[in-house]
Amino acid sequence: MITAVLAQFLPYILGALALVGGVFGYGVKKKRDGRAAERAKAMEKRIDEMLIAKKVRDENAKKAAADVHADLGKWMRDGDK
Image (cartoon, rainbow, N blue to C red):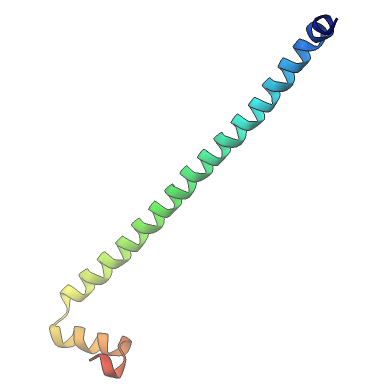
């Protein structure tokens, strides 16, 4: 008797399990995609910062040592000189 009832509802039970598995799989995929997007965004930010640092280094390399020291004096505290 229980097997007959179970046999009738087995397709619905399997369908519900497949739906739960699909929703879970979709959530995992979205999490993975979000992680990859954040990693790409962090990499872009890092590249931009590296380009800015290179630009500053290049500008300082063109200047004389006294000019570089004078420019750094604007940014350093009195006790740091």
